[in-house]
Length: 237
Image (cartoon, rainbow, N blue to C red; front, side, top):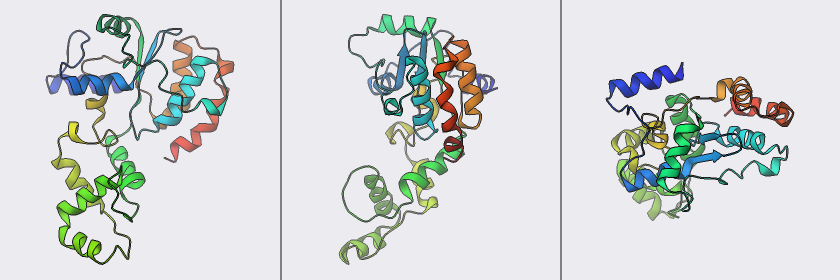
């Protein structure tokens, strides 16, 4: 179903490429390569997207690849990456053409709301320009500058919140490529119109999707039993 939707989107917006290709712009290439992980043993490529329940799902899949059941491996998701400087574009293209490609997805509106709830809604309590504080400060200076100045002048005596409406205004008025990856569109992060992914797992069908992936890649099911503990957690995020 997701493949049909992506194909329809790419065709409608005239973005679909007949053959696999990488973005020509340097920044886009760098962003894409940094999130493409590959596993030569099982001939698989995984593109991860922030705010999709990705961290746990990717950790589960990576542990399935390595055969590990240790939770300490959950965040070792940067091992074999397309960003490896030793990889040539020829080698990257060969992997894309021959490997099974996976892109984790989530309903875009759910992802936007989750980004707000997790990163933007918590009250601003300092002026440190570090993520996600820098985004909150930028939004407040843009859409509520008078109240922000008063709050700053009064010594930040009370917490200051960014509303969801202000966040949406910021989101729709920024170019996607200028946004933090947590807020960029999934198509701009993983370029499914250029890289024709074979499977699009999502958090709502996590167990079924992981079973399908492990079956397709001939991964020993005994190494994936631990993934069930993540299902409830993923559905609540």
